[in-house]
Length: 353
Image (cartoon, rainbow, N blue to C red):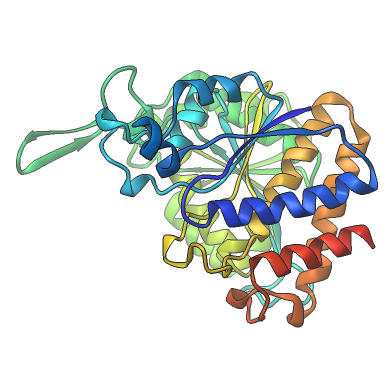
């Protein structure tokens, strides 16, 4: 299978290298038939081509079997009309990778803040409150006067319906509960539309328990009792915020694996940012990137009927559990002493053991 690798900015190259070290280890045990093509994006691309995402690279991603995407420093990019394309946003929208799947769970031996839990946030990733992805032309944020900013939210019935269906499909493979997050008491039309579609999909899944919860209440309950949640389904902005919260509650944002999936293509992408302040220092925790690659393998295995890929993904995930359980084999952000590549080597050795 053909995988496009996009290292990105900041710590991207380092954590991608770490992830590939672990991926190579599972591939050595059971050859998966993967081929890789590395393409430059972000500032590395901008310095050479005048854009952070060349059209050629986007089309290369479109024809691939999967994508591994490092973090990007899009807040530091030039304006879009000067070549500063938000790579994450364009990849998700242009390739219709609408389902941003973000698991969060505690891991044995690793301190957490609220007790054991295991949940997944199913985030719609192509519309919502994000001005760079909710208009056909132009941006959904503008200033009619120098003292007024207007920002638009776009929700579509189709977008709400398909993310709800993904959430219920996932719940059927877990503990059969979906919590739909909203603010329909204020966003009466937009979140009302979202809830309409969740309820429609729910009728096709009578085995699944459904609850509807206001976003601010859900944040408070997540801090108090995250174990009550199984699959959380939410629109883009709400899910983005809650997924960082749940990952931090599990121990660290650096533990958060993530994929962006469509019907025929999937992209692994660490949930955290590019951390330019520690770039090149071998300090970054690559766990999120390693787990995201494992999620990509699992998605590919399920899509193509490849049990070996599903097993490889499980082996990577289990190796992370084993390594993190030992305080001596953690990165500095988790109280350990290992650098990025040393941590990756320990995980790779555990995979091969």
